[in-house]
Length: 349
Image (tube, rainbow, N blue to C red):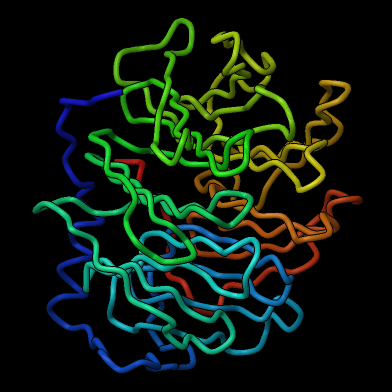
């Protein structure tokens, strides 16, 4: 899969970068500066719940913010203040995470609890190439970094770059087999990257009825199958990699979908649309709950992440508000807006 399409950076994100470069503070020490929240909050780009359940991480245009998942009201920790952090990923095996520091053009492997830098990985990047996606393989052996122009795959143990592909990358998730990655693009195709005799090989297909340059914003694979779910444009689709087929997930999610996430048990989807959150049971293919979201008239939830035991869920709204949900009761139990002035996905440009 090759892409010759050139994509411009979103205007808001460019302004965020200029802000960081003109007024930010960058530390080159092994341990980054750690600050409590500032009076003027940053812009959040997404949200992830850590595998150990301890942290809720929010990358932003002013560093990485780590919220204590058990005591949300406690002032969050801030790592790499002044740096634009568009992408993060938690290692599924080891107590570490990958953080792309756009200001320094480095992938930083850090300890989540302290922010201590384990290693910095230089990204040999072209001008105007910025990483928008980071993802580990399920076995923790690979770390993939995606931009508008390239997919870079690293050995997560040695941190050496294994392969570079010319490809627009809008979404990455771990593949079916150990050591494989599934990649969605800004111009349509879904591709598989895997190891064959220590050489990366790939295959790709374009989902049915694809509009030209329609973006795959997010991908999730069902365990031990070739079946997956993708946010294509603003609609959710099913796809099968082996059969190279795709179809609409459900008529209710044909449009206006702003984000989705699959729980760890792979039996439930949380789906955000304009003004509502839906819970979708995968085995029965039915909507079990639909809830009108706060600020439904003019704001949307786009970031979603489940707790490790699937009992709770955290979401990020475009106002910058963080909500923690009780999944079984499908209700918000914590509302926290004490730090972020607003939030948006850097891929929306």
